[in-house]
Image 1 (cartoon, rainbow, N blue to C red):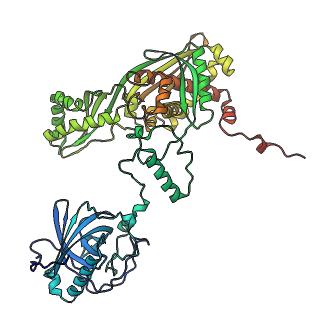
Image 2 (image 1 turned 45 degrees about the vertical axis):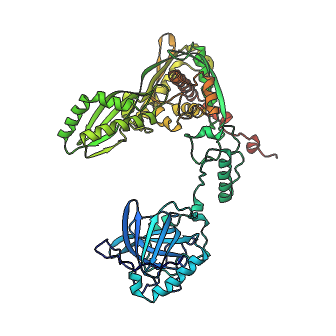
Length: 595
């Protein structure tokens, strides 16, 4: 609507810092932006139009001059970066001619350099503008181009807001020019690549129906159109998508990993006592065959004995101070105020319990291990939230120079000597004494033959610099983790082990496995999902109160796999099992041609 206004007071340099104006005679440059609906720079039908603007952004007010204006959009230079698709509200005041309100949307933002300073070039496209708005705008532009004085008394107020008329960036059309002339600068190649990412390239996120079968189907259809892939089998899953909230993002379906069963496995533990059949999800042929053979041997020998030595997890934030002396004072403060710190941490969880702090000084930095018990959950998120709350209290009182919640000293999902020595999660030992006659009957060898091989392995393992010594502990753990809803990346912490073989009395073979950092849980994470919960129920480990039982079953499963693989390498049958079970054997490919 065309309305008269009083003459606008010009924006002076003293009122706000001005960004440099565009050059009056722009030179033609080759744009470094790729071609596409948001990268095509069209030439203005008229010369550049520069009027003052005020940009209100995150509670701040910035000012400068527009680079150019057309009936479809405008360009300007500003300090802040506005992401592609940001909706804006534009309030034009063209001198004493008229004022006009138009909705708009950012369609590109690239980095430039002006007078040695970095700025951002913004392209804003008008959206949902009506025909008479464009007529008023065109008329005003014509009058302003003939009157530089009127340009100076004009003003554009730009508000970054959730504009109801804003269009999605992916719906913008190249048939409507955003800018009418190339600007006298080159975009930074890095920013050009950033600003050339179109909305159509982003994975669809569907509000209010994100965790539904319809949302997963919509993403599969979008993905098939983008890549040409057929996603028939990914779509076949039985879990209700809403139950996957908190376990997955951008849901498209489920990976169908074959699940096999190994057993019987007899265990004589403090928490796991009886005979178990262990579900294992894997695509590696011969794995379950090998573990199954070891389980039979353990069961025939009376069953594996298991014992949990320790059960705690830790996280280590780091605090930086100005001197080592200040670090020592900080340690004294921690010792005096542990009750308050514990109260803050424990207030965030019903199951977690902060049991102690173990600070370590590294120069003028202090890494503080927060050690917790976490009940039946593996507890990584639990202790993160608890420690963050405790650190808010610590930082507000001690005022360190710097503080970070994660220092990497706890080495979560990484291998470290520290966790190998002191433990992380559940430290479990499983052991068995196998009669020599059984070794002879199953593997056609003596216990001494296995020990001879083990001595050679200790030598080569030492030279290789491995942490621990084992055969294939990661194999069994990964398979059970996948089947039973564990965090599969925690295999990195959990697989570190020491497998030991000794010749016992009466020519028996003593075998043990120690897992010092087994991270498992029977609540939280993926344990509530239908498939994973069924697998836990096979072991009698679904739900609260079962985590220690589950850890003992895992330790005995690893022990069975270690016995079997070492024996099969020692007696020379390792490759035979993999030829039979580990590949799709096709005799016709190896048959001799007929004469």
